[in-house]
Amino acid sequence: MSNWIDIAALEDIPARGARVVKTAQGCIAIFRTHDDRVFALDDACPHKNGALSEGIVHGAAVTCPLHNWVINLETGMAEGADEGQVATYRIKVDNGRILLDASRLAARSAA
Image (cartoon, rainbow, N blue to C red):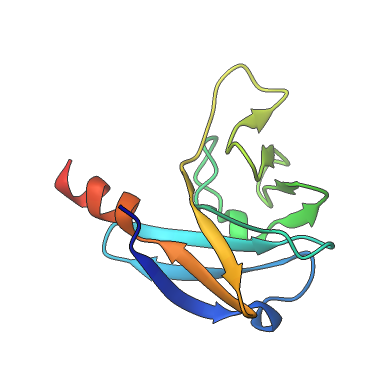
């Protein structure tokens, strides 16, 4: 069952930009691509925990500002690395508002 939380207007995040949502389970980075697709990932690179929200968004990826690891926004996988993945979260845009599915956050807090 989905539990959608309204977190921002789409226009609050610049194209090829990001914002951070702070939760009790950690920070989630919300990314907007040049073509208005929106993605949500843990805001910590799997390499050295760099803030992905401070990275450069290009296509459907973000480059970590610390060591240039490229993270796929759709899968959370580090591209070109043997290991490394960040958690992804369901997100959608409805009537110009960005909604985050909080059911995974609830599941994380119960684990």
